[in-house]
Length: 209
Image (tube, rainbow, N blue to C red; front, side, top):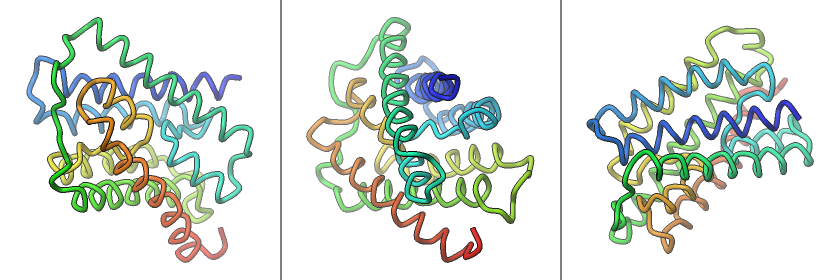
């Protein structure tokens, strides 16, 4: 139970950071720094307990590698979705949510798809190589590597797709009226594909596991 609570809390705190950069009162230019820095702390918090997925795409990748059981994967994803939605409720109390959708990707669907694919792939690949690979076992930098990856991806792709790189975050962005519900498939599909490709690349890079 402790690992499911960790996934719930970690995703809740992560989406509070993500959401506050969208609807908060300070400059959104600080968003990648806020989210990346928060994630660094959260990964170190939950890493020893649940391996700090906080992301259904990451849980899918761990499941594909047989590093997470089917039962845990399902409950992890449920916990992550619940955490993100509870965070959305907290944000609705703290800040006025937008009345209109803030990001419309209908005119650049291929670019948004590619941005989410590459960003999620970058994140999944880094996570697997610093937190799963035998070659990096026991390292103390995994949290920094993961947080900086999200930070860099947000700076690179934020204006194109919103830089969710996380199905739980993308779905909650719909509730926050940042993304349009009719376009959420762009994010969910690209992120799922990235999990499969990330596992494929990890196996090539790490033939011994």
